[in-house]
Structures are given as structure tokens and as C-alpha cells.
Image 1 (cartoon, helix red, strand yellow):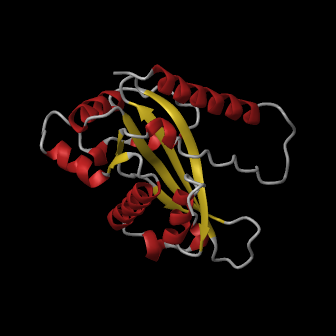
Image 2 (cartoon, rainbow, N blue to C red):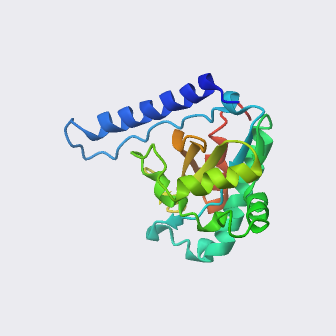
Length: 221
């Protein structure tokens, strides 16, 4: 059964994100100062309580060359798996009212339905980090709807990209800011209803990522 109030809430949030992004990108004089990051939007757990929410695997991790973190995140598969584990563990612990379906379970579901469900690691979700996307295009829309038909539920939490940047204003040369772009998709209508960029600082990738994910649930210590 659909929940129109819940759906409208997510649609309003998506519309507001697009409007704000448009206002910020149009008009106004150029400044030499770095742009002020948009505040992290808290995860809308009230609207997700009691729902099964799929958590797709991360597919994009990058770091500025000046951080010299090649030795830490150079192994792509290891980095992606560790990032997935941190995200899933923290969301499960900090938002227990939601029934999270982690990437490991999504892979099992997909592998049990070859030819029907797409491989969650091959869905190409990184493009969803673009702030102007609201409607999820095919084939991803069809892939998510099919996968959620097997998983049960309608909402998909997508970590669309993780980027590490040198923290502005820090002279130690070691501190970086993790920027985790995340979106929430209603697979039944194929729309992004909520998005944000979670940020966290740390002297290593995993501390920065942990703090970024924690910023999604600010009311929890």
C-alpha cells in the first residue's frame, strides 16, 4: 500500500534541493573565497521507520592527489568493500528503526535470480551524485524496481560517490574531508526524493568516512 504523505514528503525535499541548487548556481558575483558547503540534510528516518530499505554498494571512491593516499585506497575492491561495511554498520546502529538490507544481502538476492536481477555492483549508480537528477533513467530505474521486487520494500539508499579532499584552512597537510554523496530513491515511481552530501574530517579515510556517515543522524552521539 502506498503512503501518499510519505511520498509527498520526499518529493517536496527533492524539489527544494533542486531549487536551492539553482539559486546558488545562478546570479551573484564571483568570489575568490571557496563556496560554503550546503549543510548536511539529516536522514529522514521518520518516513522510513518500519520500512525495508536497500543499501546499494558504493562504486566510486576518489581522493585529491595532494593527500597522497594511494597506499590507503589504491586497492579499489578493498576500499569499496571497507566503505560499504562502514556505511552499513553505522546506519544499522544509528537508525535501527529502519530495516536496512546491506550490499552483501543484495548480492545474494541478485545471484539467486540470474537473468532477472542485475548485479548490484554493476548498476552504475555513480552518476546519481549530480544534483540536477530527480527522475532515475532506465535501465537503472528498471533494475532497482526489479531488485526491490525480490528484496521487498520500495526505498533504495544509494551512496553515489565518495570523494576525499584536503580540508580547507588546515595547515597540517594530513586532515581531509570525506564527501559522501547519497540519494534516496522511491523505486516504485523511479524518483529521487532526498539527497545530501555528508561530510566528515579525519587524518585517514576511514575516520573521515565514519564521521561523514554519522553526520546523517545528528541526534545520535
